[in-house]
Length: 343
Image (cartoon, rainbow, N blue to C red; front, side, top):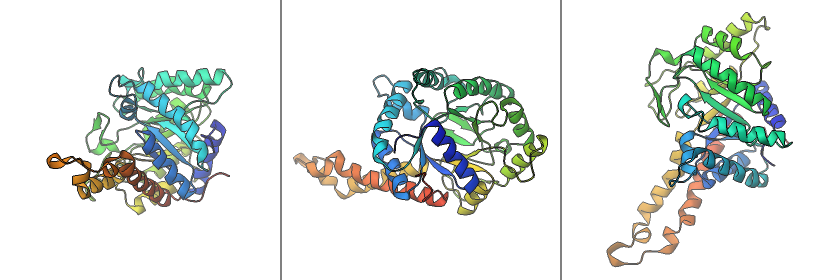
């Protein structure tokens, strides 16, 4: 199947919300990690989301120029071709983009899709993220309003992060403290500024103690039940029926979360969960194992010639792809998206 059209992406999110499951959103940084993600989704018979962060896009742009837009566009165009060979629907997304990188990343990418849509084509990406969590909520939502209007015109869904996620990702960091919990007032102000779908669809990355990266149990206190409070507060404010879920939530910093925490988040409206740290490790672990096991082959030790079959990147690259694909499959199982692909 090809990359999801705007209509298919909306249907994917609607089905996740109704079925109380979520799509893993897998960060990729190369054609091979892209294939690993696609393979994992295909093996799980799950549609999914592939995303590129600013750091990932810079890496994809090559170390000569490190151009984020070039890197993101190149991989997206590649994905539009190779995804047709996988029998699942895939949405392309750009991950965290702070204020100082908007003009060098999201805004130019929006322009690319705007031009495509004017020409009668689908957008290059299906969603973009604006990370204003380092700004005041007023400034955050003001920029979000501008981006949402442009995204809506380009048939793109916007993701917004209204309060901080702890830890560090691509140079954006927040302390682990009480600010990692979104309040009902934050949620109401978001609905007042961005609407509830009437001004364009958006995904909401609310904070319930989330932290990027790897952490040991007990170091972080996740409160996914907070998402229910946010939905209930906004539903009451806008006269929505009891039990309704106005927001499409995103779970950031999901690596290391317990099954119970994930299931609570799903029940409370999470439709997308970002996974990066765990898949990075899954990709690298078998490569390290290969290098240690084949030390004399991958290196020309003591004047020897090594073994081309062991240092050929295809040899260890296949192991890396298979391992990461297996981790994506596991993520689909954890998020209950296995077997839910649109036919």
